[in-house]
Length: 161
Image 1: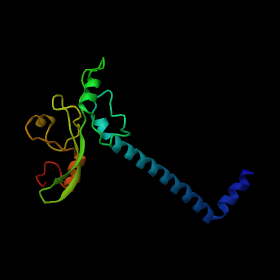
Image 2: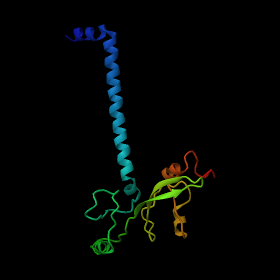
Image 3: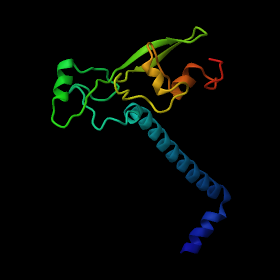
Image 4: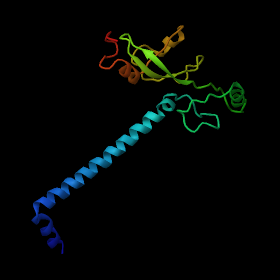
């Protein structure tokens, strides 16, 4: 029975090539969709994954996901700090703003605040500068993705920004 099926399959080259092409194309589509899903999940979670110092995140009960900007009140933050076993708690600031490049181009950027005492939440992947620079007045840092977004084609440290 297998030999009959094999002769039918190999007897018509167009059907055979179409079958192999269909299987290869569907396999490529499945792996492509998986990589898109993983990429979206990593981009969604990168703000939480970068702040590795936090063991637990506490949010306002009305917040469904981290991209909703609903800050906790000082009263709520005080209640979290008063829980037994909590060593420290700091608010997480996230906002959208517009940045101006030297070329006059406007780009909307995500602005993340960090705790000024502990520098909790600083991304470990910096394009320029160091975390220690944040202790200076009016300082900021930018990660590699932000740098490439603001100055496409410029290499960090090249002076072309």
